[in-house]
Amino acid sequence: MKVKNVVCFSILFFVVVFCGGKALPQELPEYSSKEARLHIGDKAIVKGIVLQLTYYKPSDPNKKKIIFLDIDGKYPNQQFTGVIFEENFSKFPNPQIYESKTVRIKGTIDDYKGRPQIILTSQDQISIVQPKKKN
Image (cartoon, rainbow, N blue to C red):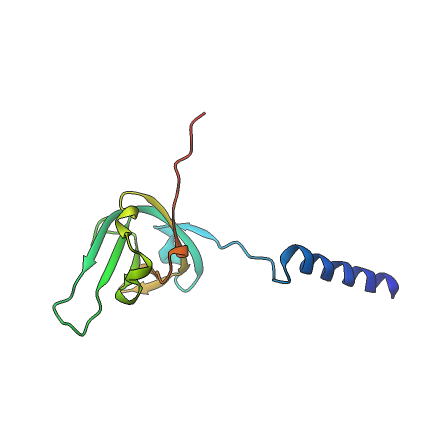
């Protein structure tokens, strides 16, 4: 019985000290833009090149403005889309920085009219992949 208590205490001590009391983070799976369509509903990271950035301003003032980051193809042939709605524009003050860059987009993969997408609500969902340095 004492050994069991010591083991349980040791595990608890490790979690509190080394993890700040938080559960260990789980790494999200990473998919290419082409693979994303096979993982609708999954929380994941999708990687690809932003080949087109489109600012959509609807003629109907009741509809939202949208920024589309088309990945690995230009609309309507993109493999995947990162979507930023108007209420989140302030969180992405310069979305042009992603154009022609390889990015990693994190979130839940949704389907919109047969195309996979992730809706971006904060900048920590997207990062630019730095090219590997050659030695």
